Image (cartoon, rainbow over all chains, first blue to last red; front, side):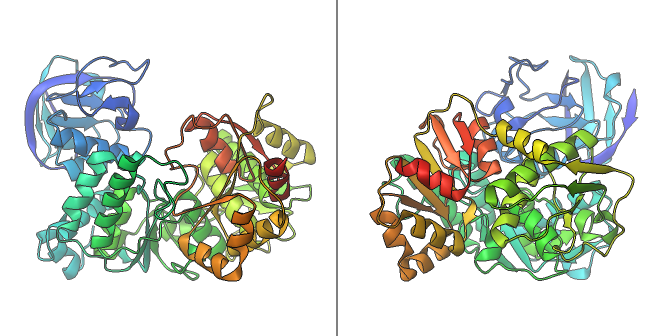
Length: 128
Length: 397
């Protein structure tokens, strides 16, 4: 299946999807040293987002989250790509400064954890 | 988005890596928010200065931008995590101080004025009516839009830095007339005066905005307001309601530019104010810390504190948080000596929101509703709000 969205930051990635219906706050919500979601009660609590296509509705929380994403990129703990339903400024800026491919305006209900996804963020396309 | 030749060249890398990265950030934000073009900004205020928030990640990003980035417009900084001259007396860890200075050095390398204040409008980053800005720091954003009538969105640290390095911001949101009209009429039916009461008013209005899902209140029934009262209100309505601007009848410059909202009307009685005040005071509080200056204390507030503290001795840790330039004028005027002789401390360049003081005190008394919010949420203190005079009475008790 092919889905068309909007390019937020360019690039290509092919990896396993990790999907949540919860918003993500990288600042305080994800450990930048391990890539593991640490927000208490989060659907992905205890799971690693490293090297995966991270699929979630939208970002939340502090604007410092953009810097946390940058730190994950430098630590090699960042996701391979990000797919959102509706982008917010924290995730958008985080993807730009960290050079993480990112697409939004995707119906994320179509994507299941564990599926292999190709992301062509430059064209705003994803393929399951 | 339509780009000028200069903007296109920045994007292509003609002006270096930092300008290119900045333009990528601004264009992406512009596209997300349907901006048709960029607008030139005359000033920038950058948040995300405290090392406690930046951490190594933020610092690495700043250093990368500082390799070839230089500001194009007047740019100032938000409070840092410590007083840059007096950090030892305030109990700040040496390692933290070293890292905080590394961050400030990176900003300085880009040509940013490292004043470290949340009140840039009091110390020379002073826009006038109608100017476009890219300001972070929610209280200053609200002050610029509402009290001055300048125009800025609520920027984050990286987007404000991107505007500083390019002199541009995407034209959307509060830059456009159609997004600046009042949506809900707030009719204040009781007398409001003093920084504490204006802060409490801001909490009530902010909570109401969240409840109603609205952004811009139009406040009537306030007969007069000082700069200090307005800065307290701005901080509070931004903290509790996420508001970037308000109108206040007969007081703010754009109050009669747009129609007064008539469909959605909220009245505030003395009972409402009392209730909001009680929500900002924890019942079983044991106060061991008093602080004034959220947002940063003005010269007038420092003069008031000096007068109240003259010949007295404080018995509790007491910080006056302010901008370094304001502190220097207070030094010359003799206020600082009076205050320090009484045992109170200045914490310039920093504030109780961003300094690494989590858990260091049990209970804090302040005159600021914003400081109550962060005192509780971030620093895990119990809180109490009162007038400046009441704060000082508590400190010397």
